[in-house]
Image (cartoon, rainbow, N blue to C red):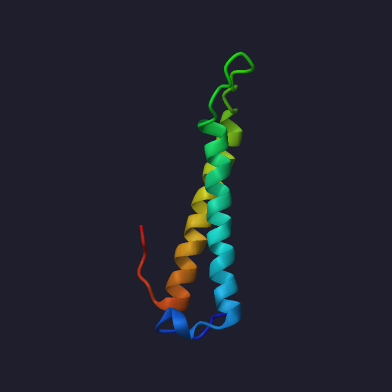
Length: 85
């Protein structure tokens, strides 16, 4: 379903705002998940993080890219913004 493009954020409907919010939440979640796989700090005298398998890292990177693409697509469709990439 293609929404009518609003020219300003103030003109967005509640559903359009929810769509942008969900896209932003998905991107934040994907970013946090990837960070947890690659940037976990060891805890002294307790444990050292194990490297994540390549398949899991690939899946996490793929989800991050998909989430980013969805956010950019939402902003483009709803507000007419050009690609942020």
